[in-house]
Length: 178
Image 1 (cartoon, rainbow, N blue to C red):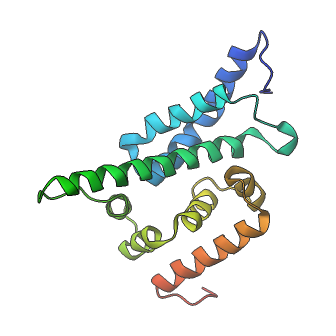
Image 2: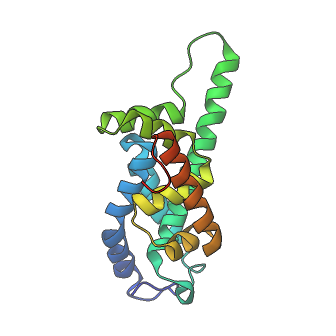
């Protein structure tokens, strides 16, 4: 069991934590941002976890949602940095700016063989709703785990997930019962 207190087993415990959770964190980040940045962000997730191990409270839940919460915050940070970078490039001149994050999400989902309408629906969701939906779908988290990962209430998870699903169904032309 990984604990916040460093001891003689700390290195072995952290290695076991990394081995147990890195593949899932990597897949989640790759699903959100693409494989080109997934290695770095997944690795950063574990660096932050190591540095902030004293913040982890085992009484509040397992380490997995805590790690996914860190990863989700890093994904959001990456998006913000990318947006600032694109805006700066756009101000420099009339050259065509690289695709936005949403365009890359749409392209990635299309390349993965998903329905283009689904890709657009995901890209159009507000970030909070997209985070909840993708933690549910990609990481297969329960409402409790999503709440813990994002630091939001159980009720907020339910309402965001419900709204996200409704918007995606609407974009796909399905009724709310389908």
